Amino acid sequence: MNFQDILFYIFSSILIVSALGVITVRNPVYSALLLVLAFVTCAGLWLLLEAEFLAIALVLVYVGAVMVLFLFVVMMLDINLDRLREGFWKWFPFGAVIALIMVAEISMVLMGKYFGLEEIPTPRPQDADYSNTRELGRLIYTEYVYAFELAAVLLLVAMVTAIALTLRQREDKRSPDPSRQVKVRKEDRIRMITMPSEKKD
Amino acid sequence: MENIQQQFVTMFGTEWGAMLFSLASNMIFIFAIVIPLLLGVAYLTFAERKIIAYMQIRVGPNRVTFFGIPWLRGWGQPIADAVKAMMKEIIVPTGANKFLFILAPVLTIMPALAAWAVIPFSPELVLADINAGLLYILAMTSMGIYGIIIAGWASNSKYAFIGAMRSAAQVVSYELAMGFALVCVLMMSRSLNLGDIVNGQQGNSLLNWYLIPLFPMFLVYLISGVAETNRAPFDVAEGESEIVAGFHVDYSGMAFTVFFLAEYSNMILVATLTSIMFLGGWLPPVDMEPFTWIPGFIWLLLKIAFILFFFLWFRATFPRYRYDQIMRLGWKIFIPITLIWIVLLGSIMQLPESIRDTFPLNIWF
Image (cartoon, rainbow over all chains, first blue to last red; front, side, top):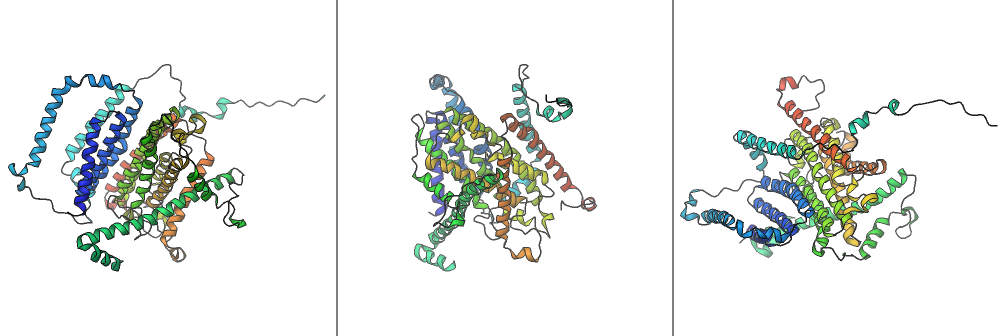
């Protein structure tokens, strides 16, 4: 066992424990924070697989932006845990089906020798100056450009929809309009007058 | 260096010796970065108090000195402050979540220090020369917000919570503009490696620095950097006049000082990144005799000090922004500017060589 294997086992045990924590901890803030920990350790595992771009993008997008907003919402809401637990048995069959599918998929990977996994060779480790980011960028913008653009349009549509659903013009709102504020000229606001000074008695 | 590595190999065997050697040498490098950085933070607070004092026609700290030397009066102030902070009691409020309350300062300082791993101080002086350096820095700086949010929530106080929410929204919005400004830099340099970005600015003089072709991006990056570090005039997260001290209102002693250290080391980090990406890093302003005598490290320090002076100057000059004004500046002004600039830069880069050569002032390539 070398140093990388030890790192792998450390990261994976933290990942499993924190992922279990996400679904078992009672406090929603704790479970959101454990999800952050799971993302970070997952990024560590990806780094061990030489996927440094994906690892850093995971931290940047999920940890740095998505989970911040998640925490933001979870902290603001006053969640009633008993109400949440009421629907458990109603949704149980649905969850069980999803869990079964996931177990089947994982077993396909783990019991690889029955599914002919040895046909796929182990990837060769790349040289130190190999840029993962450059290769990914080349593939995205040449071979997979339509899929990539399609995904981008999908995200744009989702964004526009979210804004359109929540945008409303309030009539009773009183807030200053900065562009009108900076447009104000001196002449519009003040009137210069000259007055003769009064004589002292 | 080689000898020590040999000794490690003989002591721990071939497989473990090299690993342990790299671990030990990296630890030494990390301390060589962090200890000067923390000293720099201490003296940045002193510089801030002195500079703002002179701008406001005051004197600033002028009492604490070393060994009674009269011309060093005031220079002992940061050390005295540090000692005072260590002596103070860390009070945990009764209603606070103890674990997260203590964890929050740790989570704030961790990314602030970890981001320094990829900073190149001179062509060969860099701890981790990784290909995705710029992305790594973006990822690390985006993690700094967790400490603030957790501090605000764990304090179980309304003022702290409002400060944390303000800070979270502000940092997430300005991160976008900051990231887009950096996209322009990496389009110019065609690399994410910070050393390559500096080398891309090599030329005869400061006209080759990215400051000139990317001037609007420089401004966007600098102002977003001020907003990211929650400094005045964007310091609504700790606006004294409305919410006492914002997210760290319940912290005392060393726990408070750690937030302080993180804020100032983030300031130095933003200044360093600005000098690396727009002001040519370790390159001298003119590649001529008297300038090239000074080592590159000193040039980098001078540029960092120059940018840091702006931070202090802003604080002494501008009144605090209102919260909706901050959001408007980030979303409605900076993000459109950066998007337009990315498209513009991309279309210039795609122009054929023959058209590009006819530009009157070829600052782009």
